[in-house]
Length: 186
Image (cartoon, rainbow, N blue to C red; front, side, top):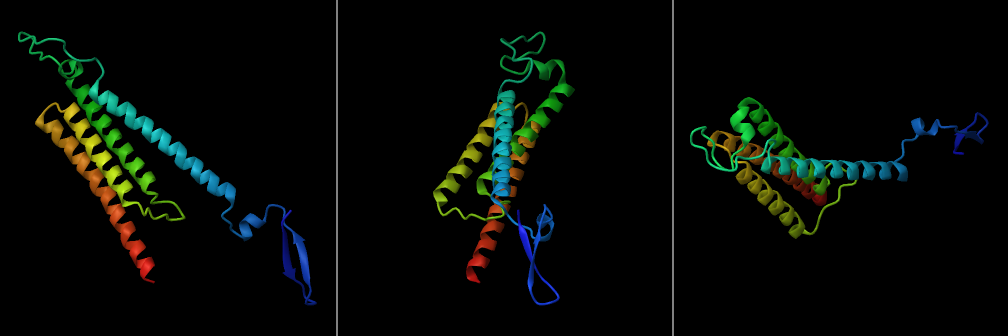
């Protein structure tokens, strides 16, 4: 049981048992809190990796599948989405929400990999790793865009989402680097 030493009126120290009140009086960063934070980060990484996997797969194989062959009478083109032709509004909702979920999950994975919001800022000295992560995002985003390209209008949305995520991550990396340089200078 934790004990708090309090000075008494006669100059002596009195020991007072603390039954759970010490958490409010003396904030600490215990090992269990650190483990909880690591567990949360691991859970978040698992969840966002699952979202990225599912949305990437759904983008390349949309609900309803694809037309097998060209059918000029019905204006069907082979390897285009059946859902897009039969239910255009529903397909657009699927398309935009799937794309947003995919790029958002990539952004979260990137932030977790960079360790931006951790209380103990860890500077990655291996710049090659950071470059590989950047290359991974660029190529994954590019393959998603080319695999889900339906029209110039829809492709523009994909490209804009991709650029927004890359700019957001770059902004965080640059700001983190500036803060690190300022701390290093002092």
